[in-house]
Image (cartoon, rainbow, N blue to C red; front, side, top):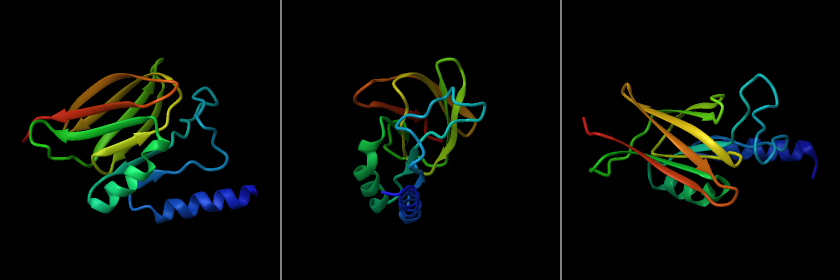
Length: 146
């Protein structure tokens, strides 16, 4: 396959998605190298889950990501959207700043330790996670009802 075809395929896939995604192009490695330059590396991620069709699409694609986050209200089962997310590596370098377009946020990170901060209405929560060499790091963030 030509590089042009792969890039066009990635661009077409991103246009067809109803969920917010940063697609991985043919130029991106499986895991971005955070030491590859001064700029923030491209971390592949996808978010959404508002509505049945978005949840179904995310379910079909989540195996491509090894970090699974969920945002909800504690005790009610109410899902949350519009949650700012920041991911830092073990040394404190910010790798990703994004806003989750729904309750589900999936990212692909190299194995290692990370710090994830999510915020709702001025209330931040931070979790240290360990991304395994195989498998998934799944974490939920819950806030009190307002």
